[in-house]
Amino acid sequence: MIPSILRRVTAALLVLCVLLANHAYASEQPNVLIIMADDLGYSDLGCYGGEIETPNLDRLASNGLRYTQFYNTARCWPSRAALLSGYYAQQVRRDNFPGVGGGGNGGTRPAWAKLLPAYLKQANYRCYHSGKWHIDGPVLASGFDASLDMRNQGNFFSSKGNHINDVPVRPQGEDLNYYATDATAEHAIQCLKEHSASHPEKPFFQYVAFIAPHFPLHAPEQAIAKYAERYRNGWDAMRETRFRKMKELGITNTSLSPLEPEIGPPYPRPKDIEFLGDGELNRPADWSTLTEEQKRFQSTKMAIHAAMVDTMDIAIGRILEQLKAMNAYENTIIMFCSDNGASAEIMIRDGGHDPAAPAGSAATYLCLGPGFSSACNTPHRRHKTWVHEGGISTPLIVHWPAKISEKGALRTTPAHLVDIAPTILELTGVKQTVLDKQTDAPKLSIPALPGKSLAPSFGEDTVIDRESLWWLHEGNRALRVGDWKLVASKGESWELYDLSTDRAEQINLAEQYPDKVKELATLWQSQTDQFAIDFRSP
Image (cartoon, rainbow, N blue to C red; front, side, top):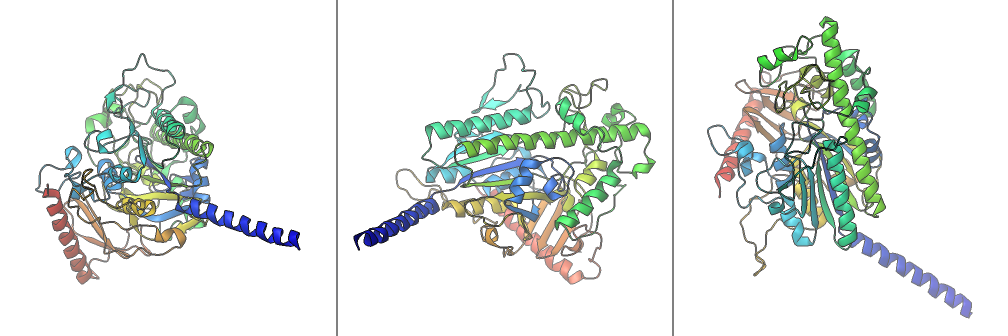
C-alpha cells in the first residue's frame, strides 16, 4: 500500500517539476540574432535555388522557415534604417523625398526615431553590433553595448578606418590573414563569449551586418579557386539552372524574366569601365555574343562573388557554434536577410584598381555588373536601386527551435524589413516606448510603426493583413496591395502587375486596368504625403 502511494506521489512530483520547468522555459525571454548580408542576390543561397555552397544557412532553413516574398528598400542605408527603427527610411530622414532636403545617407533621424536596442535595453537586454553600420549617429549612443563598426568598406583585407565602440582602431601593422568577413564574425563571437561570462542572466540582441558580397569583389585566394571554373558557361546557363531549382523547391511560381540588354549600371561611369579593359561589359548581353576575354573576365567576377558568399556562410557557422557552446541556440530567434538585391554597379573607388594584380586581391576593385547581377536576382527583373522585384527581393530565413516547430517550411506572405521591429518587440514582450528614468512615463510621442508583426506566420503559412507595402528610392517608386503591384522607374509611367503569377513583371496590366492604377497611385501618394509629415517632424 505505502509503496503504491509513494509511487503515485513521486509521479505527481515529477509531473509538477516538468510543468514548472516548461513554464520557466516558456517565460524566458528569447535572444535575438539578426544577420544581414549586403548586395546578396535573391537566389544566391543554396536553399533559395543557388549553386553557391551555403550549408550553414541551408541548415537554418531546413530547420526553420523561408519567406518567399520578403522585401527590403533596394539600397543599403534605407534598409538598415528600416530594419533597426521599424519605419520606412523616409519617415526617419534616412532616404530622400523629392523636393525635400535634409534626408538620405546623410540624414539625421528625428528624436523619436529610436532603434531597437533603445527599447530592448529597458527589458534588460544586452545589445551587440558587428559589421556595417551606415546609420546616423554613434553606435553606442543608439543603444548598443559593444560595436565593431566596419567603416572601411573599400578593402576587405584592411581594418584601417574601422571603429571599435565608436573609437578608431589603430592597427599595429596589418595582419596578413585579415579579412573583413572573418573579423566581423570574430567580433560577434567575442561579444557572445563576454556575454556568457559576464551577463549570463540577461537576454541579448545581436546585430551582425556583413559587408559581403558588396563590391569591391575581394575574397581569399583559396575561396576564389573553389569557384574558378563554375561560371564559365555564363549567366544565361546560370539563370536557367537556378530557375529550375527554384521551381523544384517551391520558391517561385512565376516565369523567368528575360535579360534587359538596355539596362546597365544605375550610375554611368564610362571612364571606369574603359580603364577596366576589354573584358568589362556594362550591359547583360547574350552570353554567346561575348568575346573569350569578356567571358573569362565576367565569370571570374562571379567566382569572386560566390567566394564572398561562401566565406560569409562559413563565418555564420562559427557564430552558430558559439550559440550552441553557450546553450543559447534553442532560444535564439535567428533572422537572415539582405539589404537589397545584387548590384549592376560598375565603378572604381577607394584604393583604385591594379589590372595586373590577381582578381579579388586587395589591389583590385571589381564589381559584379548587370550580367551576373541579373543571374543572382533570378527570376526577377532589375537590380539594386530599382524597386522592381530584382532590387527589393531578399531571402528571409527565420530559425527558432524553442518556438517554431515546422522544419523547412515556406512562408508566402508578403513582408518587409519594417516588419522586423514589431515582430521582435512582440516576441520579447517589449513596448515601443522610451521611458523617463525618473518618472517611468513615456518621454516622446512616437508615430505608429508602419509594419506588422510576423509572429502569426511562425505557426502557419498565413497572410499578414496590411493596407500596403510602399517604396521610394531615387525616384523609383512602388506600392504593393495584396497581389497587385504598382511600380515605376524614375521619370517613367506607372506599370501594374499581378504578382500572384507574375513576379517576373512581364505582363503590364496598366492599360487593361486603369482604375486600379488610379486607385493604387492615389494610395501611394497619400502614404507618401503622410511620410513627408513624419520626415519633417522634430
